[in-house]
Length: 177
Image (tube, rainbow, N blue to C red; front, side, top):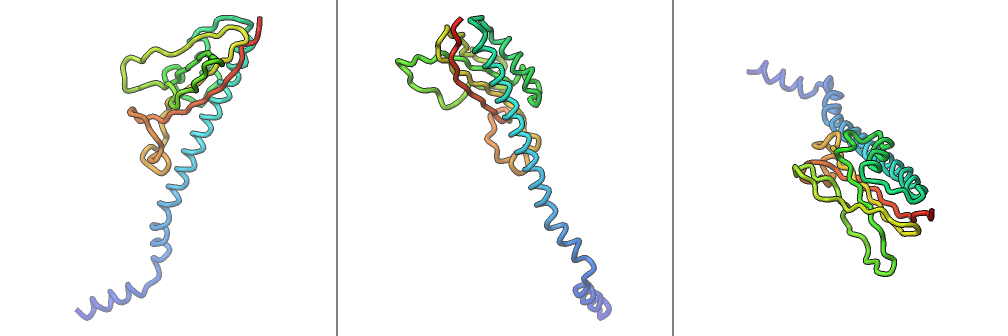
């Protein structure tokens, strides 16, 4: 019994595992910070790429000289440029509306996004404007976080299907023919 007590006392006075204990306590926090920083960086990169793709496509629409563009054409152009969004054609939704300047009541707070939990998607509000008409375009992409259960990925506002909504919007005037 005396020998066992000496061993316990010696173990309590030993400093050989002090660095390991500190590492085990601090390392998870550094991993959490790293994963959160990566998640934020990827979401910001996706948002910037979507915004840029939409801006370049809006420029083409604005200067199209009255050409009627359909939903699939515009979606294909945006998806061709938004390279960071996986499966773009199936997660992207475009809302294009003409704004009546005499009776403008504002826009809705929520963008029209893909509902991945529904088998059939509702009809999209998409209308080509005439020349010199003010147009509003909103593009919404639903993407999955890389680490949905850690750090920032855990606190992101996710939809019912577990996706994060990235929204880009712009207003423009159709150029005259």
